[in-house]
Length: 187
Image (cartoon, rainbow, N blue to C red; front, side, top):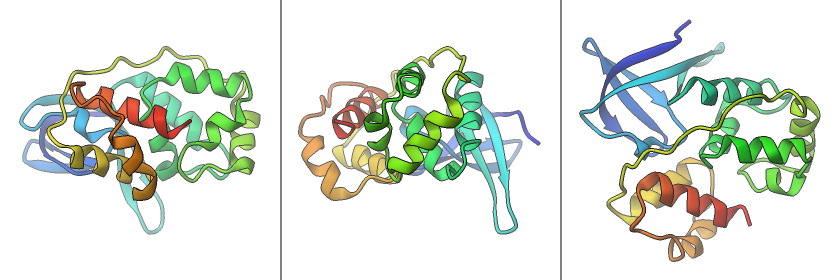
């Protein structure tokens, strides 16, 4: 089991990054790949998900983000690929608040989270989340297409994304643009 991997980002995909560590490129699925920069060193906290058909790495910028992810995937019916987009909002405190206040409508706004699963999240996690929110980095996006790819990688459909793209402030760093877009999509 891995706890973290240190290395250099060599490639960014719409839902993952490739981290080079001693000549080995690790494909790591992350909530916001464009918050990383190519050719820059990072310490990425890792969760390794192994099943009969899959051996996948999920990465996080902080221990708090990783621990929250582990809490999310402990919910019955909520897998890794559904939990990762929830973290992309960037505010763990906001998600925790929605769970504590039993805000089912807020939770249903995430991709693939329906009424039944939102209620299960509240049932399984209410009162069990104690963490500090994660800070935001200042990496910038270069095109509207990259923002669109990130949102599609998080599970949103193109028809949902197109109206939101025009409302996002493109002068913001990529992390801020993704956060703004997700706020608009969650309304």
